[in-house]
Image (cartoon, rainbow, N blue to C red; front, side):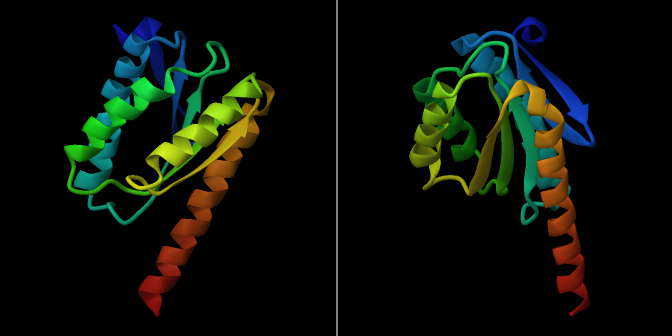
Length: 147
């Protein structure tokens, strides 16, 4: 089902969730893909380590913010705690930045996250941004362990 709605790719060990439709069914398919990644991160004892991933809506435009919020609230509510997330959004529309700001405002109380928008031709920049943050966080954690 999710193959024609959303696909999960990996670039530089960073999951990329690429939307092919911006429907409620696509949001549900995305959550079916991201939930096991979140759970695996938690199960690996990395609850205090951030997650890094990209959401590519460049082919479809942004999905329904309200529907996504409802679904994410259920997902988050089922877990004792979720890790901080760094998310690169890949989009072709400046209007999507307005929707992302709405998502940030709506989820700020439940989730700690940092989001940044990139255009489709900046895909590599988005992955580099996430990889650089991951490297800095890893170095910081290693330094903290040795102190």
